[in-house]
Amino acid sequence: MSGGAGRGGTGPVASEADIIAYFAPLTARFPGAFALKDDCAAFAPEPGSEIVLNTDAVAEGVHFLAGDGAADVAWKALAVNVSDLAAKGARPRVYLMALAFPEPPGRAWLEDFARGLAEAQERFGIELAGGDTDQRPGPMSVTITAVGEVPAGRMVRRGAARPGDVLYVSGTLGDAALGLKVRTETDLAARWRLGAPHAQALVARYLRPEPPIELATVLMAHARAAMDISDGLTKDLGRMAKASGCGATVETAKLPMSAAVVAVNAADARAAMTAMLAGGDDYEVLAAVDPAEAQAFERAAAAVGVRVTAIGSMRPGAGVVVLDGHNQPMDIMQSGWDHF
Image 1 (tube, helix red, strand yellow):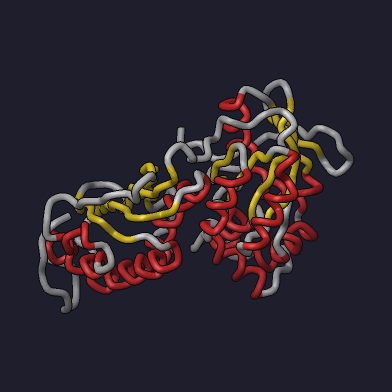
Image 2: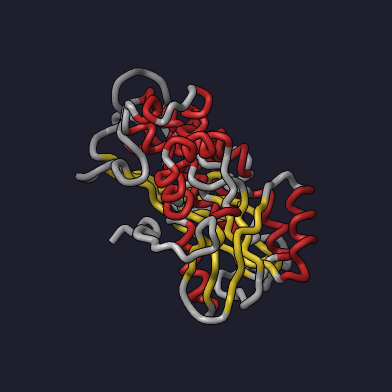
């Protein structure tokens, strides 16, 4: 992503340089981006730190809807990448972005998209470093590579959990998956007897996830293993358990619910439970913590303003066991999202 041109006017952009002009201001606090006037950016981590890298793409029809606002699409594209960094204990620093359009984007859309990126950058403490744009058949997509840093050797891995570790999740679960359902099924909020504040809260979690970046240093200090919940609690916990060579047990009675999910649960408990176990789009953190560190972990999380809830534990063996409210194993038909 290099070049330069003026902004303004109406209708679609005429060139790649026109598109770049909307994003150059987002590099103002990162000199190594060279205002997007070079072919590469330059980045140096802090002394004694290691670089942590992550790439995720969001595509229309898969990760967002055609009717979603451009600012919300931009926020989500950046948030899903920052979520992975936070779960590794990393501090977000810079990101690269590749945009693929099926047709030239309109200037109003680009204005909104750049505004959403600016808002997300401010919230997550990360800066644009560069990227690419192109036009190709197929849905519009945003691919971001996020760069963070941790003290050398301190990145929190997903495969280091041990039997007996306490399992924690941040925030609440199921909101975003239910928000997507409310957004796409126009009569659903009425059928669930949801008031406007609850329906809007669910949709907001779908449109603008808020990964708990404040938890990064807490994870680095107290967690044995961690990862973000992007594809569903049971699926992602299964990945952690497999990588760690042990099993896991989840107690559904302990799953944290927002007030909006509590309202859904009262009307449709099956939908609420499915969203909490298999929804995934909340981009919260799943962590395995040594029992000896559990109280310190909870205190440290509270000190940075992040809610964490113990939902189960790691155990010898393999696989994920989900217990219902009567402490009996549940038959889980859907574990989470899989592109393939």
